[in-house]
Length: 294
Image (cartoon, rainbow, N blue to C red; front, side):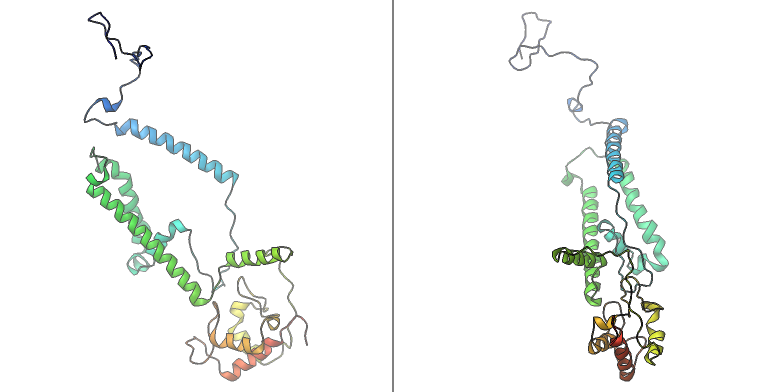
């Protein structure tokens, strides 16, 4: 900075270049020039936020149009082994709805009340928290609410995921997308074509359809395995099951259950119990169901 010899003229230079700093009255002074003042929320700050939001929204729409989300697998209402799970960013709300005081008779509170309070608080935050202090440790109420909300989201997400993995282990269920990925990987390593799940495979014919054991199977199994023993969704068909399991393995599955299949053995806690003789009849008939009849 330097001053000329004229007392009434003040000359300001930029650095050592001796270039005079221009006086541009159309450019407003920075808010830091006014101690104790800050940028007005309306319209200055809000207008900038809206502009940034519009840019992000346009970019997000372009991304969704150019790379649409793939459709999932067809829903199968008869698949009792399927465990529904939302995307990871909805896990905390999903877990919240499992609690009795936010579901059943109080489902409106869990689906509308709690989310409405949370998003309403975010909407009203600029009008309720009008303090000029920006350091979070100088704003105990707002900072405490934010930290508690983050802890609650992380905790509920972890609890929901732990419960999901526990259910998978308890029912010995492999998620369909993981099972398909493993089969596709195995086919690629073996130099084979990827499995085509849209094409229905040809099932072998039913062997010994007049066996007395079919009456037990028709009464207990067809609601899940299909009226023609064709299987449904993740539930395997009974046709050709003898190619996969021996009679002893089938008897063990029927007795103790596996995956989403309930146990039918006596004293196993199932809704329907079969005697050892009935299980033997069923396993003997199912062991005959092979692609090539013996």
